Amino acid sequence: MNFQGLKTVGNADFYLDVAIKRTKKYMEELREGSLRGTPLQRSKFMELSKLESVETELNNQLTKVLKSFPSLDNLSEFYKELINVTLDYPYIKRSLAAIKWCNGKNREFLRLYKDKIKLATEITRINQYRREFYGRVASTLKQINKHLEYLEHTRRTMLSYPSIKTSLTTIAIAGFPNVGKSTLLSKLTPAKPKIANYAFTTQGVNIGYGEFNGEKIQFMDIPGTLNRFEKQNIIEQIATLAVKYVAEAVIYVFDLTETAYSLEDQITLYNELKKSRKPIIIYLSKTDILEREKADEFKKKFKAAIDNLDDLKEEIKKVKVI
Picture 1: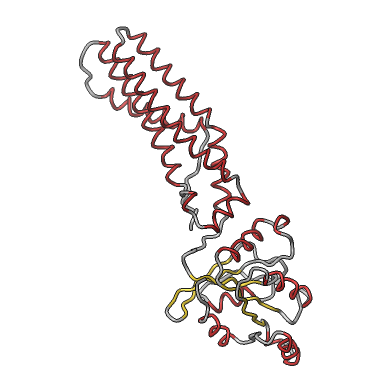
Picture 2: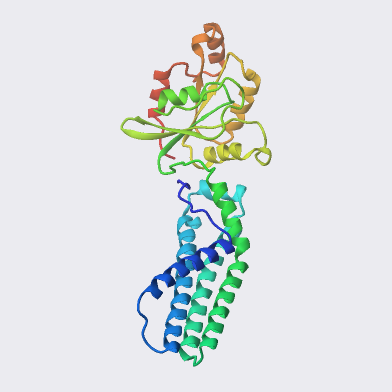
């Protein structure tokens, strides 16, 4: 799912200003043509045109906002849960419904005041109806302003969501920062993640794609943390939810050089991941600078541990969609 197509959501004044400015331009073009009939007939034509233009412009702008947002009920469980922990899911739905309500009310006002103008016998009365229409439309927009503001907040939050293809076989690459996850991702996929030599380098969920046995596999380089879910930052929560709802398996990366994190802490995080009940492939990174004896000693406890890329790729081929 990709949220980059979400349209910027303006406030009530923004949409009203746009509608009025475009209507003025439209009316200037109409005036350039030759209008026939009595002054009353010409006034009716011009004011009806204004009302229709304002309603159409508002409807078009607000409908664009509605269409840019995905159908929340049709999202995958991962994105539904992600919205639940980062935003107010029910309030988003109410805000989207408020826009639909606003469009409906504006259509009602258009029908009401078109009828009034058509029956009017005085130009002053026609102008009064136009002003009333503008006032009621502006009032309706102001009523949904808090919803427009929340939808813009929602859009900005959703832009930070990772673009995860939930339909693909997915493998999470887990472990503490700076243990070699990003390097491994670059070896398994064409992705070229940024690799920095300090802790907490993973600023998001890095994603890459590789092909194994003719099947496209999605790999997610996710940050590791021992914090409880409610204490995690947004990136860490995304990682936790991705393992729970998206990943078919996890590659857990151990760095036995312990340059960034102690082996004890790495084992603790590994045991936490085991609670997800997802198949875990243990991979030893940085073996080129690791003493052979240390790797052999580790393998006595973790017999399934893999320390070379070819064997890891063979294990990846065995991963099945859950």
